Figure 1 (cartoon, one colour):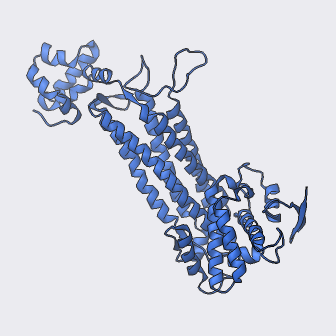
Figure 2 (cartoon, rainbow, N blue to C red):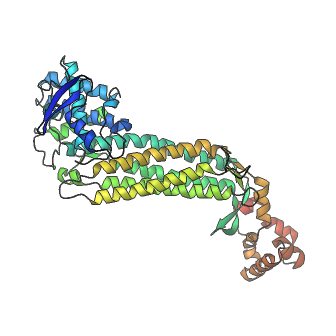
Figure 3 (cartoon, rainbow, N blue to C red):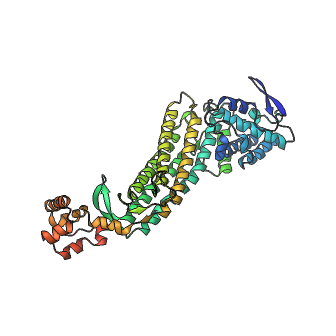
Length: 467
């Protein structure tokens, strides 16, 4: 294997001649064998790192800090990296020590070597374009890494929001489809009062659509960046006007409404926006899991459960019980939600672990948030495509359970009063007789005409007060 020598202040190492990363990336690959998941698995993060380096190069060029030819080569290299051409060169582990320094240097080295080739030089000839002196000019890991992280999160949330919105729309579609299906509502797993299955599914849609607004709130929070803060927020090694200018360039490069933090020292160590976003993801996961619990209950049986709805049959459910089909999609979404809840605890602990002017735990925060967003996005697509769109209602069975239930006695409260209604319910429960037979036929407490007026379909699903 052909190699090239590279050095840092710890010594010299041989690097494969054909790779674009350098010595600090190599050391990180050797030191951080934790998840086995390299940052190339998050291409939006790689893209965001390139955006940050491009914005910095444009600002440094404009301020006369970088020679025009070097700055232009860095910008061109960043464009190629942002396009995904060099994703395979971003090999540092997602979880690492050093507050993300290895990720930052991975980007600096790759972009420097691509720029060197653009300038007509060989990889590793850093006299002409250096990872630190040129690509990392006016930057520190402590502002470049979190800025790239926030840009990537913003863009990743776009796809998640679309997936969640499509899932909510699918529930709303079923709500319209099932609007004339009568069923029994339940509280504490006991019969309550009748309702429309359409209203039940429409409520699922409303429940999830609320989360779209929370995503928008979180995106605004993570749009505040600390670019120009460098090491701790004092802006050391940056030319006058750099922070505002680089933010302006980043707004143009990314198309995002990025805002420079008002207090760069506070912004350099603060991770509150990540805690907020993680809480939003957990909140949505909890809602999804609750909905999936409901789908599993509503489809339970088929002969000995509620059996009000049918979920699509996707695979055999048992290696020993023939004919058994399990609610595998709601189950997998439940498990995804459990993971997201655990990742939220990771973010909470990592955010709390910050000390003084920096939180060095940001890599695990990024890993937790990226994976949670990915898993929730996949879960939304899976639940929509493989479950919700294919749900059917057992309308006759659901309506029959309503009319045979004791819960409908609640509709008689305004007419007969609570005591009489409770007496009817007790006798029905003890004898197995219907509420109708006891109230109308046996006790004559109301006429059949009055019964029919009270128990119309419309009045059962959208009650009006009848005395």
